[in-house]
Image (cartoon, rainbow, N blue to C red; front, side, top):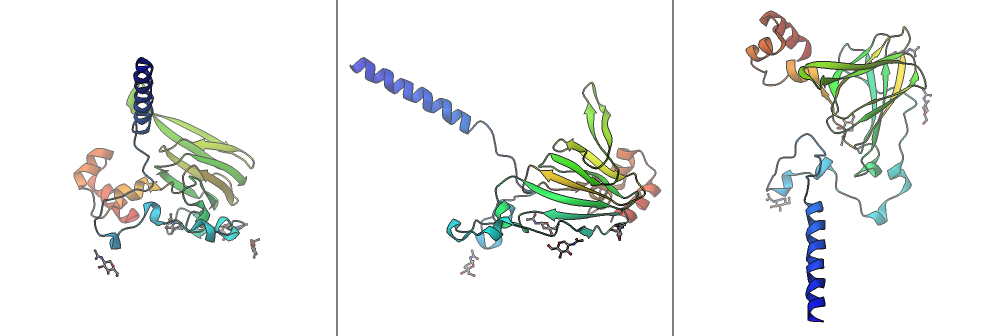
Length: 228
Ligand SMILES: *[C@@H]1O[C@H](CO)[C@@H](O)[C@H](O)[C@H]1NC(C)=O
Ligand SMILES: *[C@@H]1O[C@H](CO)[C@@H](O)[C@H](O)[C@H]1NC(C)=O
Ligand SMILES: *[C@@H]1O[C@H](CO)[C@@H](O)[C@H](O)[C@H]1NC(C)=O
Ligand SMILES: *[C@@H]1O[C@H](CO)[C@@H](O)[C@H](O)[C@H]1NC(C)=O
């Protein structure tokens, strides 16, 4: 009897150890770009800036949004695209669900310039027009080379951009083009490469950009003027 009891205890300890090792085996993915620890709770926000509503007070409108039959705000650049974003600010019920959406409208030869979504894979469905989409990944054999995966999409075509890959969407046609993007994060984030590198405040040291991109210093100044 005593023997059986200690065997049982041993099994229990082994199972507990196994499951707690599963639980503590990895960190959760970050849900936003920056989350610096702070003592003063008056100057803090919850992850994504949102607390949760008392579930008893939730209603259908928390899970509803409209306005995606129209294009969004044009981006303040001459790239020629507008984006209409469905995020937790517009649909409070999205909070913690790990999903969001955007509608993008591109003018003829409009471009969503090279960018990254650090926290989401993106599924692109073309609704109208002809859009060239593609992403690059480092070549497995040589990280100083890269491979491009690109397609020309027409209405009804779908392309997927794996999480964190540099990618572009370009309207190849002479008419407006529209696509829907779905993200597996409520806060996918967007890092526009040229704006991040040439428009940063404070600016990145000239020599870093000169060497990093093998460009003349004058070209760096020109790029700074475009992207700042
Ligand atoms: C936070 O704000 C409350 C109310 O405004 C105030 O009473 C409290 O002292 C503040 N706490 C800190 C740490 O500043
Ligand atoms: C989009 O739908 C709204 C109603 O939700 C309507 O008022 C608006 O006119 C529609 N826009 C277009 C371009 O059809
Ligand atoms: C939601 O999208 C709007 C429009 O782009 C943006 O201003 C806002 O910061 C976003 N909110 C969150 C919580 O991501
Ligand atoms: C194309 O998009 C532009 C800018 O969003 C808009 O002003 C224009 O009316 C659109 N053209 C058509 C035919 O929908």
